[in-house]
Length: 390
Image 1 (cartoon, rainbow, N blue to C red):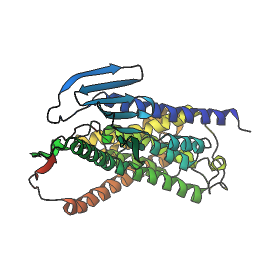
Image 2: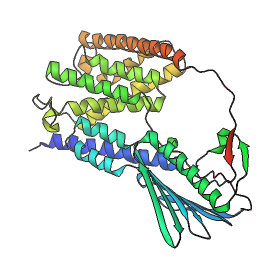
Image 3: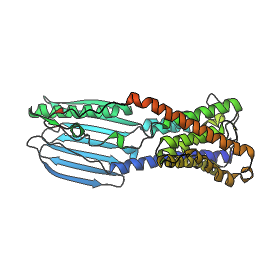
Image 4: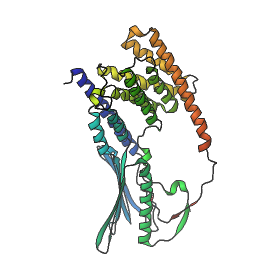
């Protein structure tokens, strides 16, 4: 049986996850306010009417021409977006659906129920993992035909959408027997009506720093038989990782890295309840959940200040680790002048300086490899009737 303290921790951790997922949905929904249907008209086609219909948790944009009817619907739930373009005369249609992966979220919540590291990693991935579904419907010879395609890989979503746009364009050209071509600018010839990259996403460095937090926590659990922020050698690494995150990311992304970095160590620190390979190690005990929340916010704040310092060209972003002093002053004022505590802060600054230096050297070595000479844009041949909707 779990004690009241442990139940409080479980409930609080669940609230943190739910609140973050809801925030992600709101961010995506606010960004969806900028999207709309854009149709490149065929010869003889003209827009007859266009209307935006707001709802409580969704919005629609409808455009009708003398050839086609287009409907784009964006919903708050699972950041759903759906586009349908139908021919008025034959009801042939092209449909595209795009939403956060609900199956992945359910699996993550099932694993997170026992505070597992895998569950936390899967939950964070479910906040940025989308399913894209494409359907073509058309009638021929008195029969209806449908072709489906879908992907859950983020890297493939945009390619699938571009492919579907090209297929829709060719279908319209074949139907209208239009053979004219024109040269268009590549920057505007292939714009979808909504872009999967406009949704919330983590920084490319986020996964590496989260992996670092997991590895350090596992190392501490293996060597010291527990995970805590009292270690003289390993605790400074947690603070240093937050500073390195700040040097690499924008402030909001840096804060999220520090914030979730603590919960990564938290997930490792309860192996008896997680059922992982670390189950033979004892639990470090349960503290009040608000204390955990303050520590997570403290790491996030350190990363945020380090990001602002790096963005403004301040010389020593490592000094952001000193923000740990007010947190200790509130929670454990008797340790504020303890020599071991001050040594941890000094070591954290040293780790952070080393991490920032290593990252800068890596970026310097990588830059010449990725550098490519600027080349003028090459004209792209696009068939008449290219549709700017996605």
